[in-house]
Length: 403
Ligand SMILES: *Cc1c(COP(=O)(O)O)cnc(C)c1O
Image (cartoon, rainbow, N blue to C red; front, side, top):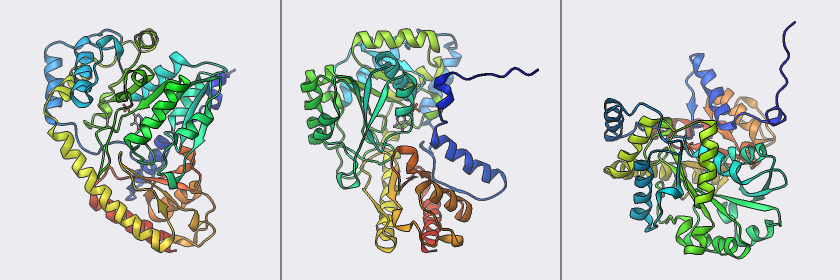
């Protein structure tokens, strides 16, 4: 008789990451020989810069192919400290830094070390798919606070304050934001920081897109608003987005020594250390020439400007609305005006998930539904791909909207 496995309560309700699922659906069509215009990707399309790849080879040749300290090598922690001093004037000690297997793992470690049943975690929506899933895995409750397109999808200090209860353990901020591209102004951040200090609430600031900032937008690290704010800030970032190193799996957390120590204990039991070779490559990324970071940013900015231009046209033609992205590489747009109308192939849809399915099937354009980000009626397009592909894909999207 076959054994029937019964999953844990946590995994019975756990869904796969919706962005990864959307990419898989596009891949399936591609494997049938169909040309798919895939804008689901949440990663830079550039290869990792050469000097970083060479540092990885040198690390292997030098024998750095063994286990390292569970929380990462001291040399990388020191490099991370140099990075924050260089870029933001912030002084941290290596025992405030933990290196993990990508920033997603860093976020998991922070939540798991701080949260449990009965706790609440404030998450502004639209939000990155994994935030609430990781909170709920610990038995804590994700308190979702909706932001609006009119506010550029930013959380106000009043909204933050109103969501706080005696059970609040943490607020999770993503600046610049995936999926909206929202980038907070320094004044907006300062107002949030003031609430964090007054109400004594720690803020997990996911700053993975810190180097991908466009136009007049200014980036400020959340810990730069004085020592009282820095004490309440847990910074998460990494090399994935700035250095086109998603596959290398290196992220970091900077926070209070005791929290970092707890996270290190957790990591030592769960995964041991992050990849030794990737850690050495990350030192080269941080300490080496930064020209490639700016070159990639400039390229992303050209794409953003092109895509924003196209969406401005679609706004007047089809009532597609959006807030201009100040950072990251996404446009998050509203397609509610097309619900109930005849779209390409005679399809009629009533929600964003069906919109994405119909668009993929009829026009072979792959996007991610806003339902995956807690934002019904919206759709996410990633512009981390060539202008040529964006042009062809947006032509198809327009034709689909025109019916
Ligand atoms: C890509 C991304 C991350 C982390 O990526 P890693 O590859 O795990 O370092 C974290 N937060 C957001 C919002 C992201 O989009």
